Length: 88
Image (cartoon, rainbow, N blue to C red; front, side, top):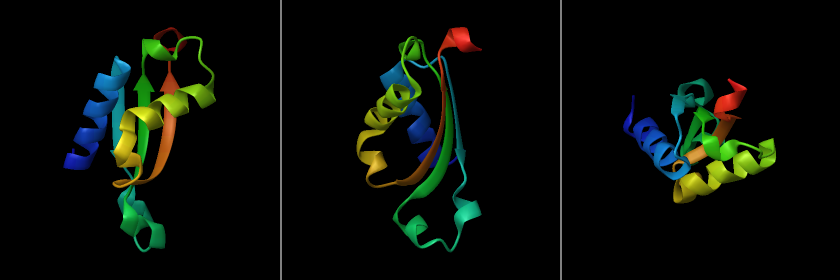
């Protein structure tokens, strides 16, 4: 786990009271992509009770808000899978 993935995981766990978080750094798959110089490419899977009754768009907005400044600096692209505990 890199420092970037650890920081993303911690922020999501804390902000969303997540029961499970998986962060995968996919930046190496995008080497040479011009936008990749401005931040990494990540895929996240998050399970949080805060997602219960929320639409996929609301869940994504919650994740973006939880990551805050990282979305404007260290993250260039983010693939999201977000579930409530009862969906598993």
